[in-house]
Image (cartoon, rainbow, N blue to C red; front, top):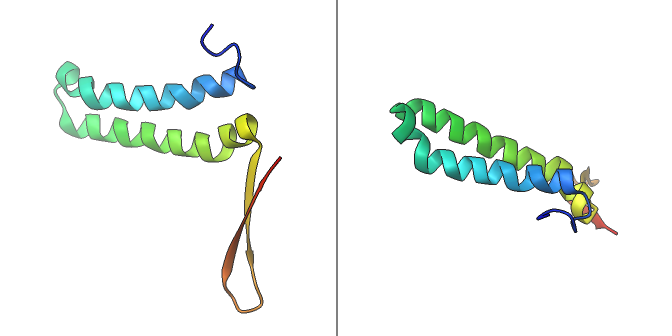
Amino acid sequence: GLFATAKNPVACMFHVGFKAAGIFCFIFLNAFIGEEIITFIIVVLLSAFDFWTVKNVTGRLLVNLRWHTEIDEFGREKWIYESD
């Protein structure tokens, strides 16, 4: 299948699925339901789900990317990115 060679096929399906659903709804949903505000809300929610999934789940499972933030002694925020 399409995702058979992925490191984590389920995570890969969600990674691609939220993007595809957002694009599909952006292009076609208004034609189906005729409500621009509902279409906007659904597209924004799908985009938020996509962002959260990529940031918190698929980044870790597919490429072993981890990050955290530290505050130094001067009060400045420093982002630490780690990958195997």
